[in-house]
Amino acid sequence: MKKRTRFGVAALGAALAVSLAGATGGAIASASSAPKPTVVKLRGATRGVTLTLMYGSSGPAETAAVNAAAAAWSKSSGNKVNVINASNLNQQLDQGFAGGNPPDVFYLSSSLLETFAKQGDLLPYASKVAPASVFYPALVKAYTYNKTWYCVPKDFSNLALEINTTMWKAAGLTNANLPTTWAKLRYAAKRLTRNGVVGLDVGNTLDRLGAFFAENGGSYMNKAGTAFAFNSPQNIAALKFVQSMARQGILKFPPQQSSGWAGEAFGLGKAAMATEGNWIIGAMSSSYPKIKWETVPLPAGPKGIKGTLTFTNCWGIAAQSAHSAAAVNFVRFLSSIQQEMRFSNAFGVLPARIAVANDYAKEHPSVAAFVQGAKYAMPQVSTVGFPTVQAAFDNQILGLATGSSNPVTMLDQLQSNAQALLRP
Figure 1 (cartoon, rainbow, N blue to C red):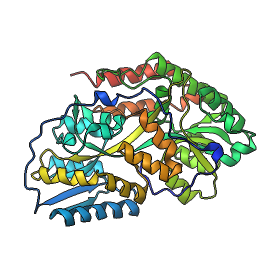
Figure 2: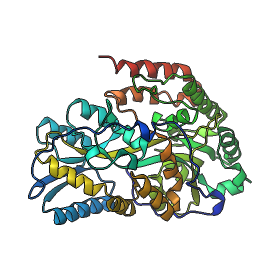
Figure 3: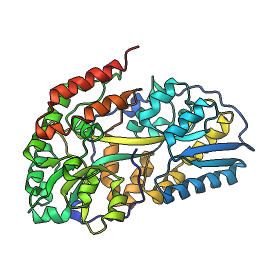
């Protein structure tokens, strides 16, 4: 997940306001398909023990919040928590497990779930903390492997569409032109592309373009989750749509604008719209405070399907932990309604619990569009070895703008390379 800092951007007018009501979509498994509870034997005492918590911080606000939560639970439970702010979380987790001394509790990205589950590193404790139904289905799905729900989702970030409201009005666009469909997105991007500014900037990675797949009814894997579906007709059509906008010059990728990410191009005024997650809120507040902007949900595809991508962490518990009983109690505290809201208020993450996220969005309208997407968001691929496969695909994306890359060939290669990862 991207690193995020506490947001500080208020809603910028009713013209681009977002409602949480009426969200629909079918890109994820429903709550009724949630995994069955797993029988897990917990070890150790629940009082008088010392746990280790390892996490990766986005900054001082998150560091302070995590330490405060650990201190509060320690005081109420009679236990102690050794809190480690990892400089390289994945590397330090690997070292801990390899050395037989992993942390009891730790942050775990959904993209690494299968890797850790296959290695037997994760305790499948989640159903002991709360019912799956209280969390967004996409987040439960993200931490389910072989029908086993391993860990409780900690928080999430979704993609949405950011709009420079000053440029929007200057282009003569109104609320009626909001990009609720691909046709309206193309129209708005064309109108906004002028005076050296591109209408839309999108990151040159599957972690951004995959949203177009979802909007067109496509997905990364088949419904059963047994095979990849990258070169489906829906995904091919979606990538061709991106290519057509790129060739038209109304969509650009960050390197084309000498930017590190779409949020930078947007903040510098090089792009009138961008597709990024709620981590952009803190960046805009701290680095580009003078920009007037608003966020709306990503547009629906030609068939009216809404889609977005979600990025999330969970509270992992080491299967080898000698204090798993206390660790589960600790996670129960960390993922409680009250503590989720404390974390969100402290450093801007979106709560994993549906009810808490809805309350948070009501209190903070600037995150409403991001929360809305949680009902139909598509999680990352967690298959072991996929980052290397994805990198090969990502390296071809800039070619969509120049004509050197072909959507069908790109997706056929991605399908072939990804499918090979599933072979015994």
